[in-house]
Image (tube, rainbow, N blue to C red; front, side, top):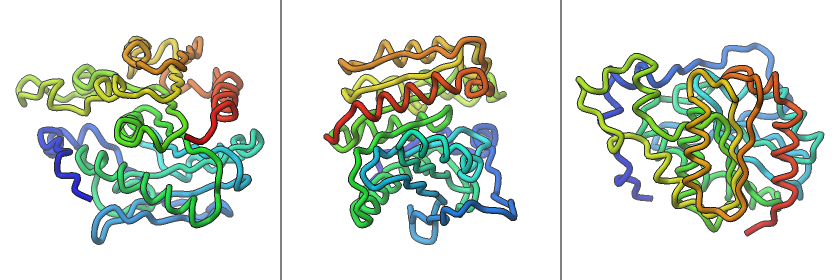
Length: 265
């Protein structure tokens, strides 16, 4: 697969990527009973994943987590998804968890394609027949939207949680001098542009008082989405890191209702 058209080289410089990514290895001695999976994304490079399967006919969620998180952080979450009859498939980025390599924006977006194709093949080979939705939290919104814009006929729906619409404000917040480096919004990830291409059923979940990615970014993504079936869910009182604490019931009900009402494309 030729993915050379994906080029975010202005963001791949160390003075930028060092702020953008916070990889953390998986050093925990205990692991869940779900085996680790290695997804090859480039020669000599694989990223880690866990495919928590409740039932082979249940809906599937391919999940891209937020920055500073790793797949094993979501072992307990898998039980919640199972109780609601959903399969949960979290994946890492390069350098995160048990993955190889070092993360860059270009590799993250290119890897999303390789991950998606691997997951589709794995589900088919293991007779997991339920519909496949894609979900991204925070940083993971970039990977989820890359897939939604590229494979619209192969996913049942899109869920964005705490996702960003605009890259430059976020980069300024974390300390990147985008003006000196000559970085423009057009040089960046393009979440808003990708959302404008998304016709699949969509749910956007965002914390009311998100202090990292403001609620207005969620609104911008919602307004840009041309899908007829779309919904914006506000988690009241929560911020970026307490969204699940304050909104667990609404969060999970939103996802469960969404997936169980969707059919395979």
